[in-house]
Length: 319
Image (tube, rainbow, N blue to C red; front, side, top):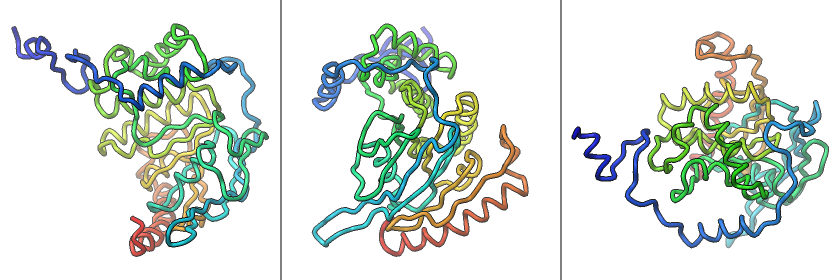
């Protein structure tokens, strides 16, 4: 018996390759509560991914109007986000770039309805959704895959939450797993995959939740440099095919330039938008564009803006 075969017989596996686990991790108490909540929720009538549901209006897909957020602590009131107003067109790829602690994730949580705004409103496709949940797909930096569930059952969590029958949800998920190059990993556990594969699975879970607006909060931040570059190209390819409206958070200037139509630069805390930079680079984009003169001009503008704010954040102990 070869060494790989002996390893498989012992229940070992190699990262990034299908294999067998001796036993998947048991759900924790919070995990069991999550699954119970999913089962208790009444089914909601929502269109399937790729169905002929009404898409977003051609203009003003996301309107954030005067949104701010303050917290009250032992030392008094802390302003995390000053009044912020932006208008995002349908199908745009918009990035928020700023130092740590500047309110980027706070803004996303308000848009998603997970955090109440102190002031202002959020409208999506002309509907006021301030304080409401379920109107966007939201992907965080960590993949948050459930270790006791196989990949196929991880990516359908959102569909289960809205009442989709499991067999129908799995069939829908297998189509995307095949399209995104993960079909052979559908029936393995997350810990048997590489970091890049786990992020792809998390993105599939996000895409399966049938919404036209995606919030992506540093989804590539935990990856190594080479995998991150590949995943950036992969993400652009998927976005080009789907043309969903994307709001994206990153600390990486090159990532912001390469992916975006528009970059909002945010100040150190209290966060506010200090620049709105159009990325007028041709699409589709390939790695070669990173060496163009136009690319470097936009990169220089963003670097100049973000460096000063990062120094402020560092000196204030935000970082």
